[in-house]
Image (cartoon, rainbow, N blue to C red; front, side, top):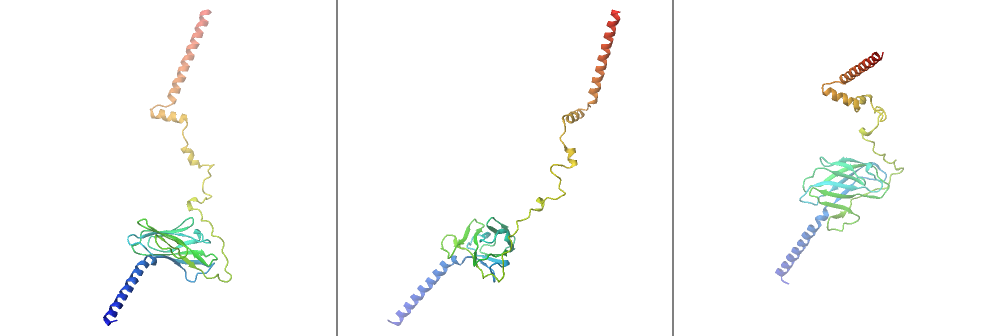
Length: 253
């Protein structure tokens, strides 16, 4: 084989290899996205542990607005408090975990945030299935166990590996239920439902007589006037009857 032929062959091979590498990189780009959870030196039964989450974006047209996390067995929503995250974002407990959400982050920007867990359960690893929502309605589902199957929006769930519990570590008591809000807490100063305050007496509904009096006052009259007239009529009627009877006695005498 001549030198020129060998050179062309080498160049052709190099070109094919470069194209294959480029295609591999392109195909691998979506797989580089992820949601990960980490905690330096995390151990089973450790208390007040900070977990750091990193949610990579897969959209070049919308920003991430919410991350919904499903907690593993052994951690309740009441055990989790918010650490830090994007500006304006807040943590809200749910029935099965929590959400961290807020204004959309810049398009193409990943989201990192942290939470503090009261105590990690006695386990070797913890799975934090996550739904990642964008401001255009797209949802990436980081919920698969094991390697991602690829395609669609299904991806591997973030997993936290735990070291063995420290010697003497014990489970703490369950987290107490949330206290009532200040407005719902009963106090001794609150009036009894069966004994309304005396000031409410003045607001009692008016009786029929009260309404009649009010109507009369609005008409410019008073109940005393008709009562006086009635008394006068009765007096006159009584006098007439007395005169009639006296006249009959006089006539028969």
